[in-house]
Image (cartoon, rainbow, N blue to C red; front, side, top):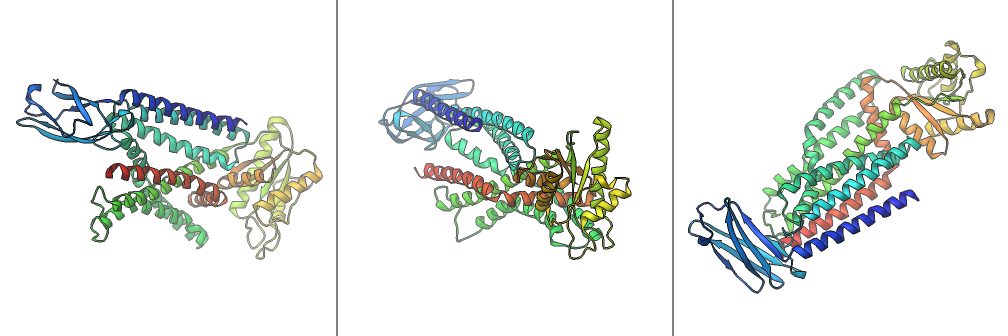
Length: 487
């Protein structure tokens, strides 16, 4: 209910701000003052002639020249469009004036600058600021309740996106020129990815180095190329709009130079779609990395009865790989920390079945290692039927519940895998906290990218829905741009 009430508050705030903005623009919009600083050669206001093409649309009621600024105050007469010319011996300028319903005057564009319209970006900033405040509170509450929820990543990604939007609107206030200016600011906001291109390039180089090291040390595999592929995709997507511009700029089939032509706005729409998609992906990527790091560094509460050790590939001789050994060692380390803190011993639950290329089950291999480290056999429950993380958690939880009632559970896995494993447990309604074991630096980048792609895939419907909503808004804005130009 609280989430619904927040949504209702956001809607009501948007409605109130829209009404206030409309009232202010309607009350102030019937007059408009043209201010020009490019008035070289003018020393007296009497030397400026004002020629209005159609005085049935607008009339001027005052003129002034002060501190090098020429001011012409206009008042609306009736709905329509007209041209106004400011003329003197050394100065000549022509502008277009629109008068809309309620006598609102806009300058130079159909939805251009008008008196009081600065309230629009101010209202947007106020709305976004409240939305940001609400999302930060939701993120904190959601993370504290359960750090393994996918919506935590979504909240964080949208928070990053809104911060960029607020900064864009604040920067636009200085040279604000109407509704079209607001739309241009919003659409251009998506192109901030181009500013991240040097960072994306550096990250891509690191991914290449990481991928080469990974393949050299652990062998070739398609999954090991994911980091490299994503880095190249991000770089290419960031420069794709510029490549399209150069292509269309020299094309004889499509004319994007006509400001009133449909082709220009189709091109702008394509650009916007590219930037929206890549911006959203980058925000979610940043959110995934931040949440992944926070969950990987998290230390569970020292009140646990059991700790599940999630299995992975073992060596051909039945011993543990460095990756799996790290998970077991981390579980032992947590057990010692808890025993020192509250004096409570843990039951270890090594989890993992036997693969076709393995001589024993992963769980049995971990049990052997645990006993070599001095862990008594009566403190070990073996789950040796699972084949993946989902089954690791499901079968281990069932085994624990058959032995211990209302057990408090932790799990140990590699740091990059903590969030997704916790999310899988959360989807099964199993309450448990994870602890992350370190992995090699050459593997970490590629591993986090794999987790990010898995996150996108598991929540693909929600991500597509959010992108679709943003795209629809972009379509409306580009449409308004086009209609404003041909008006």
